Length: 278
Image 1 (cartoon, rainbow, N blue to C red):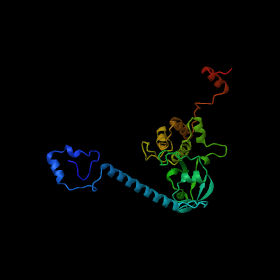
Image 2: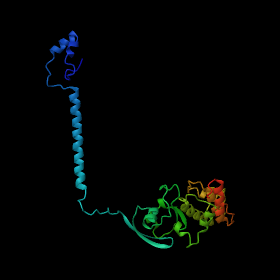
Image 3: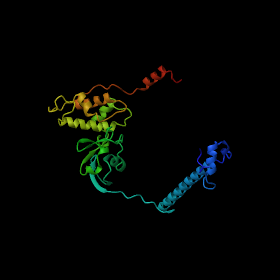
Image 4: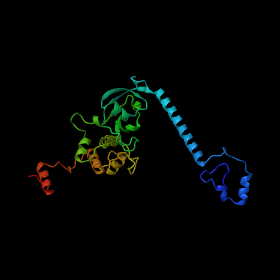
């Protein structure tokens, strides 16, 4: 039986379909005209109320934001930096003094404040090695090193390895052995390789060493791979990287396995491909 408090205006003759008992019960019920409402009316009022509340809330938010907005023509001042610290350290042999937020990492200080963009930002989580630089003779991940912690220290980036037009031996070896393709990771690879060679000269053991207590300054290819494992190369130039480091480390020069094509070789290649010009 339908709820008598909710009338069905769409079926005014609904009582004609009731049984005798239901009709008798309906006769005994009090008149509820004006108390109940149709389902359609109830839903319409609910939707209207919800929309009204939403509109009121939206207008209140707009009013609050309007009060926060600067007046037209007013100069907008940049937010003041917090926790400023004065940091002084050497970068590629040049003394630098910066006033920076204590939360700024060395990577951002080098790139954004000193315009030394050779150091690359890769994962920004210390996993790819693209941001590797050398601090006091040891390789570090500059994305995980606070710039404020470098006070009084000596930082070397990829820009500081060459001496004028004379490249660092590792830079020469990387070119010779075709140890890079896109080049994005190369600054970090080379700085890390410089650190590896310094570690070998100090006789520091590698996890790939058979006996970590034995002091040796010679590195095997496996040890070079292990020491360089923190530097990722998405292009897959690892064989060339190992060969370049091993040549500089051992001092045994190997023949260059590639070279630039000359004009005659380029012309012959075009003919073979059917692109010869008349």
